[in-house]
Image (cartoon, rainbow, N blue to C red; front, side, top):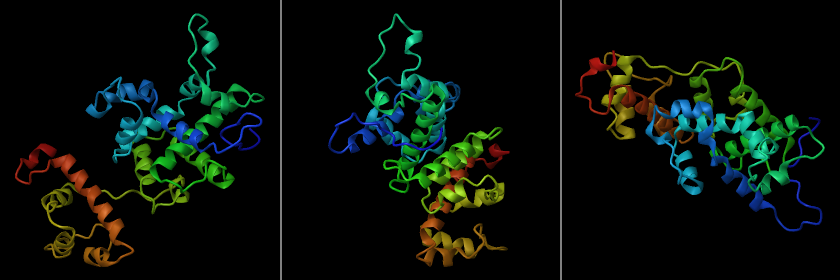
Length: 277
């Protein structure tokens, strides 16, 4: 592929805005993602992935944007699956002469007639990833004009997300980072990244035990824990809580650790802690 072209190729003479086409394309991200084999394999592990024929459109979008990076990772894997892209573009229709092919209005506006199937699939994967990123951090990238530098960053993200040997955990962490606007795309696509913070079991128990405190009370308690202050983010919790530039990041980081602690030990501080061993 020699360049990055606009997503849609409107018919000659077409007038007016094509904004609705981008919205329709973004809504289509949830159509059929549950058919991806990796999603089917992992669906049994969580009830929110059980197949429901009626789950489409707005309901699917709402579920997608509820802060579940594990589910979001599955969706992106399905969107980048080349066989899925070929199916969406209609390249497999000729293999089913007895079946009436579905209406593919958007596909007809996206396919480049002078490109190979492989190049068209690459284009669709790129724009699916761009629309996916736009869902998690709206208006940060320009994928409609498109801005070439933004789309190049999208391609870098695809390469990092699908690099050989990447683990499910690392893919999930990438999705989790995408949902945090303060982490730039430039940092997310770096293949050499600092290790994510991992707390000990004792520290996670302490996080669970203080989960019901207010943010302010928790900051004070963590800084005054004995015999040693609990400062998992490298500085005073009270200072971070009171700093307008750091407060939101601190709250988000705390909530993530509380989520991890409750997932490991449960929400009741009096339950048997030995079950985690």
